[in-house]
Length: 146
Length: 393
Image (cartoon, rainbow over all chains, first blue to last red; front, top):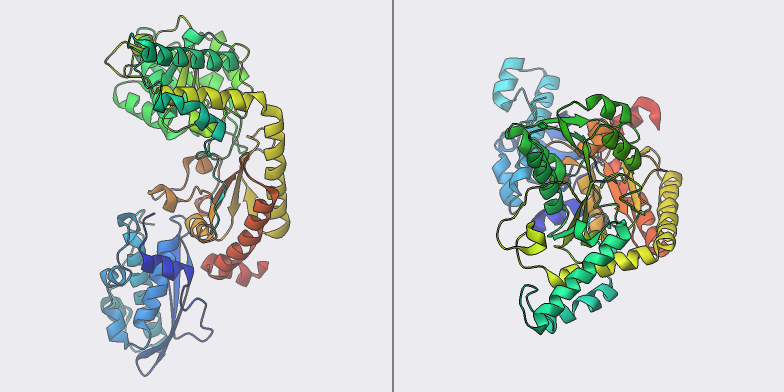
């Protein structure tokens, strides 16, 4: 697989691996059948993501996209984090092989799901409002639509 | 950093003696075997001597051996060539679900061209189901093509019985023996084999050269059109140095087969036992007895194969996996699915294939690193976390 140096660097030394025991929100996307699961934990204080951790079952690209996206949202406001696109993740990694682009989509969706979970726990918005704000999708895996 | 090569089912390091045998045909005797002058005749003689050596190992006639560019060409030539030659009898072919893509994709293409193909299954141990094979035979069946040894899980198929079943039913039997040649005694007469593919680089020979055996009297259409080389069955100037290398590699492999197999089997068993002892929640894929001596295929639950390979690569270790991420598709290996593995366990498979240059010290290094890498990837895996939370660990 033709990975960029940045991807290699991130799967070699992934940042923010682990879990947050008292997480404000947890998002899990993907499934074992496809070979990718990402679980993102966020800690929110005053609308700012003060801490973020992840656990990922998946290939090198899945680990690298998880790792770099945690770095990209840490210290950001929720609104800023929601603006993070999979293409931003790909660009920060110096590109991904075409067959691995879905990993960056998973990273974006894992962040959105974690923020949605935070909103649900907060209890201030309806499910419809959360879905709209976090742009939640029905199917996480574009490959097999499970 | 040193390289520890444990992917000998993918390819092997060319033996120095093989390279030495090839060199004169690159530097001095470079003549075209079809040419009339001395260096041409020398090339021609080298090709014919190589053919004799290959025939001797397989216990067939030299005139039954055709040199090709490798295993894929041999498979394509045999399957398409035979299928189209016996079209008057019928258009039904039987193969297995665990074949190499060189066979499976050829069969799929033939289906598009109007042939009917039955893909028979394998048991959980990775051995084809002979009852299913017998039931699949019809009056229109012309060809059974089943591999000798599987490239992913190393399982040895009951070739002799398959050959007997084919013979009894007047069906031609081709076997893709790319993984078996160099590791298994092959007597095409005793094993009832009508056609066989082999590839030099799997047994310390050069890449880009292989051979096809087709029993005398059987018809098969030529695959590459052009000149009259290979008794008008395979056009193109012969890869003389490659062919010489193939024969030399075969000669070396079969002059020392028992000792070679004993050594690599011992190393393989040592590796598998070490893993069993040191890493929990693994699954050994494929029968451990009816198996190529150097092959191992183990699934490490809760982790994914590509990230495992990448981490091994960082330590200089070369291996392979049946994970989807290494195949470029969304599905894991068709072989691992055929033996009934769930997707998530197939994704975590690791093939370590040992060859004659490996040492016990290398295996120790690999095991030590695998323990660390598998542990680290599991700590990172939400599947492992769930498993632990459910009170399993």
